[in-house]
Image (cartoon, rainbow, N blue to C red; front, side, top):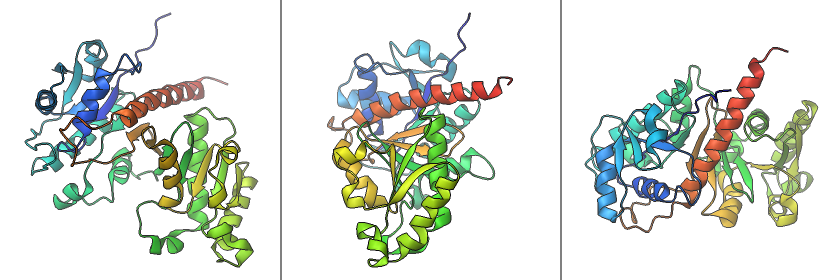
Length: 345
């Protein structure tokens, strides 16, 4: 029986002046050591060649079609050209940065939607650089959701690591705004999307969700704030009525030690630092950003552009390596789930 063709992963180049090119080159060099799945970069092949030469890395770069990437992967880093040439030097974004970063994302999304890429892995972008060029989206994730379809799906950010997986209900908003944005509807929708993708893409039949309280000690039954009695507890009860294994509100200060982590599959917090601080403390170099809720798999290394070390050879590719490996696993499970859904009953 002939095995169906499985396309390679699309890795968007990210901000060309950042460490995205550095870690992509370093990851390819470690492809055998880490048994990396074939991937290609959407971006400027000349930029990758120049960065490899700057870093003194012996990385052959080949421009090719997505379908040919896997065949080239053993001997060269495949690049699917996106058009805009990049002139930005390491650590010094310029007028070419924003168009190049955006074209890399657009190309990667188009390829995965057409079935020519198995999943998307995104190198970091600079929101400041994009904003200066007229980018109107809050961030990378929201732009990917916009490109996904009309109406755009609601994306959910999960930071995954072998030690801990977390989801913040509110993401990149000022802390002062969190109590106003934190609602039953938001929490319920976030948990539903999380549970669905944990089942479909992570293969967890009955995901266990630990829901953090917004306030210290989960509000102490209302004595330390009413939000957890008005928002969190009713949301958890509604989720349980739907058959989702949710518990809470739980005090965040006792939720992340080793014994507690064995009792759930993902912790959902009210705000960004409540759950991202623990996962970065536990797995800073291995944590992976996973976007749930999209019609395709998207992962990303959990770090920024790091302009200060771009081009120095000090960028650690560990998070990108984990993002590539996880993207392949999730894409394979997603594909299997889609195939099973099409089978006659």
